[in-house]
Length: 622
Image 1 (cartoon, rainbow, N blue to C red):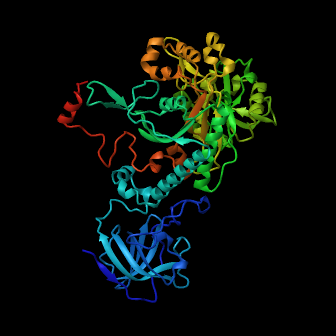
Image 2 (image 1 turned 90 degrees about the vertical axis):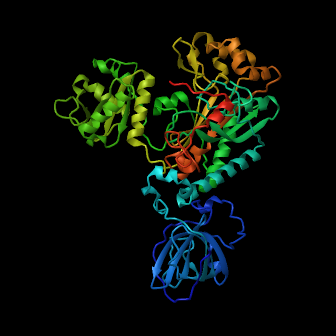
């Protein structure tokens, strides 16, 4: 039964901090971002809670929402903070003792200015309050399993189990509404650039050419399976053959992979493909969409999308998704140590990084760094403190490098390392000697361990990584393995290398990276049968296997496939970075846990014996 509470006007009140602070809707978005205004309220309300303002003074309003906080003042008077997705408004009520947090209410009252000296500048509605209130309880609530105003203090498992309550928090409201703004901006950019939004199937045929797929048994065709698409890759290429010209989709994709902070079974990506384009054209399409999304979310449009070759990224940062927000670049000191007598430095490559001020690190921390390097695959790691040279050291009065291995290095070698790395007094130099790729990647990870800022700090640094290798290593039989997928067009200058040095062939592929997170990948696709056969042959895929796995795509290429290329980037990752979140679960409405479980619904669950019989499925003991 509805509870009606009539307020009697009082002249004073208790002014305390609000339980939550939220700007106008959409909550959490910058005022300069220009998000669409909420629609005019309808139904039971005439105003959104967070949008009640000075212009409403003297007007009667109806607001609806949840009781965020109730503060008693005297025997009868209470201050009720009522919350909806736009924020909080204070309501002055009489006899509100029956109301509890998370009750759903409708409040009718008159907007008035708060008494002088009691305004709350931390609240968008802090200059006003609603008085002369009538409160209708639309639904009651049990005590929630956690306090909504303190999400950082709540165990994530509890938040995910009661996700429908967690979604009411300011953090989740802001993140999900920011995500909607990003999606809308992406669509604006794609529409402006002449792309057609097209939906591709969710039930697809098995194409084992990437991550593990989720299988869906067919009830009508016993023993046959669909798979859920890892991406619309092949479907969008077929759309190019069909003359669609420019396609895009905000696509749901599924991959049966191990989960981590930036990966879920289900994810959403902007997927696009265009005909008669080169890779610079595709990168321009994507850069515009990302810039539009970033500006809509933050109010600032990124002006630079520089490019860097894959080789340069590995050599300077030890990673093909470099974080450019901080320095500590890798330095090659191989030439300095070309004639060294120190056996540990006789390696194909010796790479170094400098940790500013790191000479103060204690021995335990330094030993931990050595173990970290070994755990990453290096034979070891050498540390050297930049100190003042001592008498008789060969560097008296000058900078020298002190280390347990310093006695094995000549003075000119130590001086050469210091000069090449630019080390200064009090710095720490870390060196790894190994195969070039190993030395770079190990130091690249240690660079991140020591210097990477939190995700919500520093500028947004986008970078395009280009000229990836077409093949990434070899399999047990010595055959090259595709670095991306087998439909990537090789660099035209490298076609002759297939016969002599296939691992040196560059791909017309490109990744977009933001602050060390790979947002997505793309490539110019193979559209010529002779080049496709050349790539298949290098991968050890014969004609029979090619037809069995990709026959419908190869068949389509016989009927006038245009030159085409595309890209896909993860919207979950982009939104997480724009929201300053470390984990994409914080920008997904109903995510899975690290183990792939849904704590709220209990998924994955079991099928009944009848359902299994209908599908023709029987489980065998391992």
